[in-house]
Image 1 (cartoon, rainbow, N blue to C red):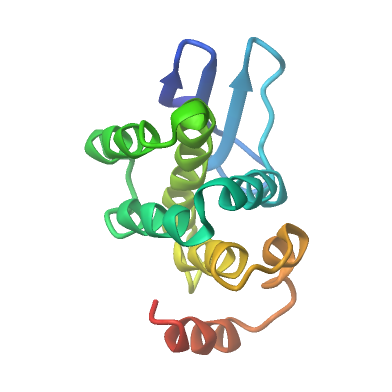
Image 2: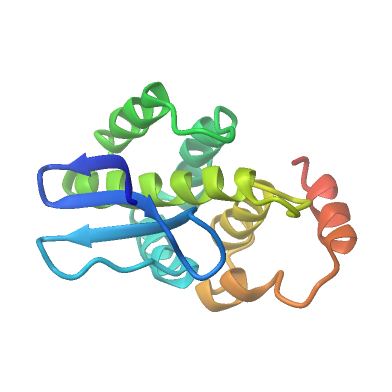
Length: 161
């Protein structure tokens, strides 16, 4: 059974539901089109483009603001913070609100994965690589695949998270 997270402008529904592994799959329904589970590469590509408009560091620091408040449950104050942050992005308010909410939900899901060692930190690594190191969305989205968690943990510690 789907668990509602947020509806943005009556056109963008974000929710958890059963996926291939657990009930923490993040789904997005936009403009009444079929719902789907967004992939990291999709929102990384959007953030990369917006980073060229607003600066990657600015988007990253805004991300870290709600990252620091993320735990294993959806918090309405964090959702409100995301909407407030999104309002600073002029013509891209809705997109930022949607995709920051999707990545927030993804981090909540990571915090709930039973055997995950890195939890939400894996999303921060991708955002850091994308927006600070300026690697491609493809590299950022796939960097951790096949790597040992201890290797990734060391890299995260070196970057301060």
